[in-house]
Each structure stands twice: as C-alpha cells, then as structure tokens.
Image (cartoon, rainbow, N blue to C red; front, side):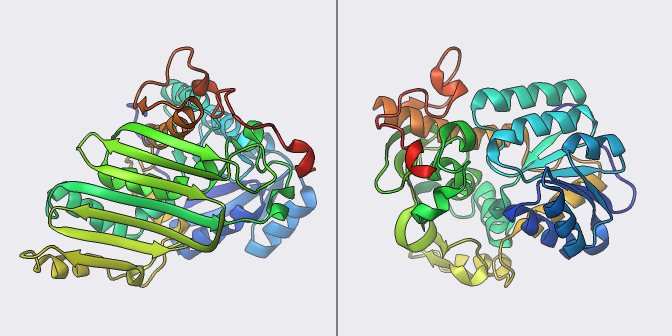
Length: 376
C-alpha cells in the first residue's frame, strides 16, 4: 500500500455499488446496518432496469449506466465492486485513478499478475484497493487472532480447513461460472478462498503447498474439488479441502495449538455458538479466556468488515484487507493449482518471472478437456 495517508471522509462514508447482482444485496444490507457511519448514495449497472430496481429497494437516489459515469459524477468515498470476477482488476484500477478507494469482492483479480498491476497503480495514485474477506472480521476470529499473536494458546501445530459445499449443474448455467478466463478457477478461487483466508490470517505466512485438483461431476472447465497439504513458516501443518460436490454442506476450521483446540463449523457465516474450545490438560483456565471474547450472537458478515473499514477511514488509517494481504491469499490459490497441475510442491514466492501460473490460475496445464459446450 502507498505510504500516503488514507483520505479521511467527513461525516458518513458515501458508498457506491458497481454491479447490482446477487452479492450487491449483501453489501447494501451491510451498509444500511451501519446507520450514520456509512451511506449508500449511488449504484451503477449496465442493466439499467436492474439498477433502478436495486436503487428503489435500498432508497438510493442516483443510478448510472457505467462505472465511468458514476466515478465522473463524484461525491463518493468508497466504491464496492460487485461485478463478475473478470472485471474486478480493471474496475479497481479505474476507481483508483479517479481517486476513490475500491472494495472488491473476492477474488480481487484473476491472476497474481493482475493483482500486481493493481498494487502498482495503488502505489502510483496513493489510493487503496481493499478485498472483501468478511470472515476475518467476526468477533471470534478477531479474538482468536489476538490470542495467537499474544502466544496465549501456545505454538500452532496442526490445522484443518474445509469448504464442503454443493452446487448443481444448473448453477453453472450462468455464463461466467466455471470458466478459467472469466471466474479464474473453481471452488479454490470462488468458494473455499474465504475459509483459507481465515486460516492464513490466523496462522500467518505459508511456506509450501502440495496439492491435487479434480473435476469430479460438474459441467465446468475448472476443478470442482481441490485438496492441499500446507506447511507454514511457523512449522504448523494443515490440510485444505475445497469442494462443490458435497451434499452435506459444511465450512470447518480446526486449529490445534500446544494448549488448546479451537474449531468452528458453519456454512456461510459463523456466530459464537458455532465454535468449540477444548483446553489441553493443565490449561483449563484458557476456557474462560476464550469465552470472554468469542460469545457473540451475531453472524460473521459483510457488516463486520464494513464497520472495520469505517473505523479505519474515520481515523485516517489504512483498512484491512490490503492488496498485500489479498496477494498472500491469492498466491495460495495459485500455488494450489500450480502444484496440482504440475504434480510438484510449490514454495511461497516461487510463482514469479515467466511462470505461466503468474498470469493464469490454470497455467495452461489443466489435465482435462474443456466442457464449455456443456455449460451453454
């Protein structure tokens, strides 16, 4: 992120949404939940009718037919990019060049090279791009991260990260789904990325990935299952599984530390009741320490991250999740594909130079034929 200070808005943060499809509703609802701290003042969509309907539903006074028109009109402090993934990088750069910070739905970009271009423009303009990884911001994860940083739980040893979801063939009838050049990947990029972002946020930098990926059932170009073995710089080891073919849906994270096991199971958002804390013998006092900070009844949501962004912008500070943070998570996805398709371990930092996985998550090495004709 640029060393320049983050602009400090006066009064409520004036937000605008670019793209009024499904995920935009989560953004609008989260903005509304913040009351006077953030206000939705404009929306844009290439579908004018959808934009008007969305604006009417959320009491928004201004609608535009393009991101350019919205940005040219001015009067916004933050744009929320809720369009299909292949547009994210270009729209973030357009916003930064207009002097407006961008908050981008995952994935921030389709490749590490695209994200590096975002970072270059960020440095040039001094305007940040942020990424939506809302599960980092739920009270229990914030509490867990603090305990880890303070060393209260002892050294991290073993972890499990599972995103076991289910999507039908019909889900992929949407033209941009299941295609490398439009979505960037399968569940590794578009679904499990939320869970392993939390894994990385808790355990810190990863060192090496060994992975497999497969297309088991779905009519996609991309994988519908991936699995990885991960070694972290701090010595912890983890498994990461991402699936779209699992009828009993579950999102599960388990962390085994020297002094306790901390785990959560949910589907699309957790609250305090979804967590289980098990102290190691002799460390029973940690149960009370855990309970003191993890008992929220609110589900993790976009609201948690937007509140953190509002606090940071009001203070003139740099909000999470920065481009550098997002790159570590995106690099993990790229390493998963690079390891799976080349059948080799991939170290952090190894995808560089002329490595084909720098410019494409598929790296041109997908071991199965395309099925685009089956998606049409």
